[in-house]
Image (cartoon, rainbow, N blue to C red; front, side, top):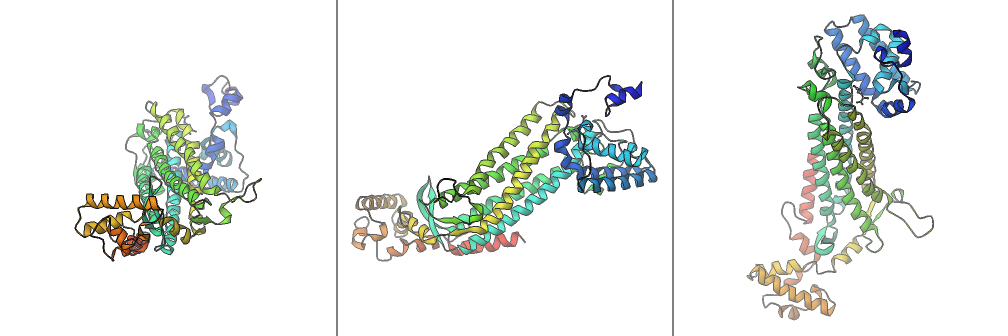
Length: 464
Ligand code: ARG
């Protein structure tokens, strides 16, 4: 009787009287996406088996057999010979079944004191920890590339914008450093998230813990976790660490997307501030003149899917009572795609930052339009004793005059300028130059070339 049942519903044994349909099998299986957890699954199983042997829950002989079997499985997986079976539902059952084929009863003893619930939670945490380390390495590379670009253009002047209108002159190095700051905070967020990822669920078993005399701290230390999850129900069920990661990832992509938007605008022939190396651009199949900034545009687009994954995980979690529910199997694809998208994007951007060539003349010409030094003229009058509000008014009148005449503030004669305020003297022309304007903003966080160089040195030190 038992034999008959086990033939019908292989993974589940005697409890079941009929097999699931093929459609349900496909619907419930996760092996085709969770097989990417194979490496960490084996790593977790070996740490568990080591603990079982140490606690004399299994014999040393069984442990040795498990190690040997797992080594072969690892080899089969990396050489592509491992046969993944839909019938065995997920990565965990596939590996355990093969282990049992290879080493017999020792393989059947591996699951003692463990459940797939704490097993999968452990796997995801191990996987995510590795992904976070990769991502932080890439964020560092990207920042280093941007620092090199900023250094090259510490003195290059372009207009800074508010409301997409010329506001004040800034240095291109300063502009790029704004993104270095953003990616720096992103790295901090990832590192902070890692602390909560790096706790061990194993030992929670299905939900309540186990009757075996396990040593969770030993497993935690073998696997490099900082601590164990302190409540078994919480350990198997919550995916807040993955949600937190996706939120941090969405912010990285948001920063990438903002930068992309600027790259696209700057590269538009109408603006012409930069060019991006050909290897990051594509042409048009119909318009021979085109060179499109596809990479930044795609990255801007991919931000949407990463944001979507965050919402998917939040929604997945919100209705779940304690403890484990199968809903959680749906955590993997959004998480994997978030990691893949972010990793690829950062890798490309770190390289692309080295392929940005700047056109200082076009930037300069743009900075000379739009009365970018109007604030400098107002500040000049303030320093000569005029209250700021009055200075603002006087310069507003001067700008209005220039608009009518179609000239720049710096193109007016001294006499003309003096009609707006008798305080104007010959030294005014220094503050009306772009160089004077940026150099005057010489404090921590300001756009002066000197400050840009100091900021670069500070950031380089931090990135050591
Ligand atoms: N494939 C499952 C997942 O991803 C593993 C845990 C299954 N546990 C269970 N009780 N059905 O969550």
